[in-house]
Length: 286
Length: 281
Image 1 (cartoon, each protein chain N blue to C red):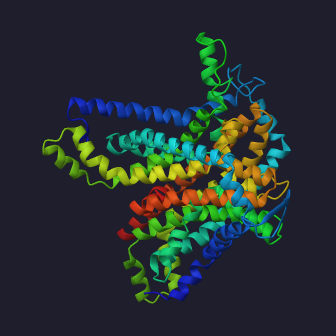
Image 2: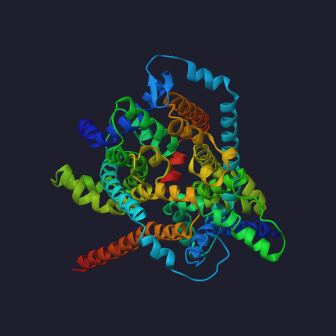
Image 3: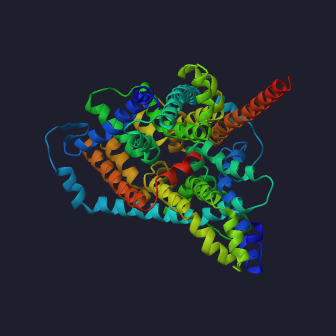
């Protein structure tokens, strides 16, 4: 009903931003993967397949990629299992101050991610809560090595991603017509059956959106492995950072970024094949 | 619906388990944060347990740390600019996406949420490589524009969700009564959209103030934002000063949205009261 030219004028600032800061950089990055690395910080525009050849033949990179996918997958699945309970509880509870439970889920989004991550050092570290308590109780003689392990990295990622998961599942639970459950119950379903046959299937879109979001964000993480993991627990994001900021090997760094982008993009494509993208949007906006 | 969950014995146990798991998850979410806040008052020289006494010395020391103060000012400034610009362009984009029909609307709608879904490492490298390709130095403005890119999806989503809920009848009424489109937007839509505008601005502020991964790539040489400053301090040791810094940051980033929310609630209550008196007259 309105003039499309006006619409284009209105979206122009955001469109330009997306073109120059999102699309063009990815395109330039793609071009860079075919550049030749000369020495630290210097590359020439001679077209080469050396970067791709190195990536495809060197097991070092494959190991990193597999580990990243494994850590991302494990994090997403644990998030799904742990996150379903609070989402269901908030949805089903008759507790009057339900909004408080929801608010508490949003508060972590406001707290600096760096601070939330390093605060785990106070729980898992040698002078952390667990070790100090166990030492005092005399249950252990030596502090346990919990920090700087893969477990600590997954713990940090869970801490960062659980609110995303819970909110996604909650949003899809909220959209269920509650009379369906009453109907199932009145037809003789036990509550477990009603959950299995009605509630769980209807909340699967939210669960799937949460899993997708958690997987992508975990697999792309950089700060968490750096703070909570040892050198061995570095993920693909750390590899990219070191290649670019440490070795100043820009063509290889660009290649690795494009690889991560394509791999995660494939997962997202498989996801959108079966689920609609709008589910994730609901979770993000909610 | 609670009948569905508490019907039989099996259901009762399942419900108890759910409640127990919920409590565990909430403890998991907040225990580390509480530990950091508590430890910031520790008088010990080391940044960990056990507590040896109460002290505010780490806060005093923080106030004298010029590097930290500088990083705080930088972050605050970047976040304010980001919040302002993102809110304006984001709300206008959301308005166009919900109220106009044009070719490519669907594509733009998807494109605009991409920055929230693509890992920051990739966005970070991409922009950096592009800047290098055109031989531009990293400047503060690039960093700010980058932050705007990261915050835009959230502002658009929040505003869009609210705009969908505002009925078009109001605008049509204003238009048919002779108001211009700009006046309609200003007088009708914007007031109704205000909660989403405030929420979007707050979100954009915290996204920028908090951003770590991408800022590590984009910041100009020698510039530290708050999170990158914390990261470089953590490389040296977990000093108690970091706990104090963390606590201050939590106060700022949690306090501002909470205050904003309260303010908004107060405003709507005032306006509602104003409206009801008008009706009575």
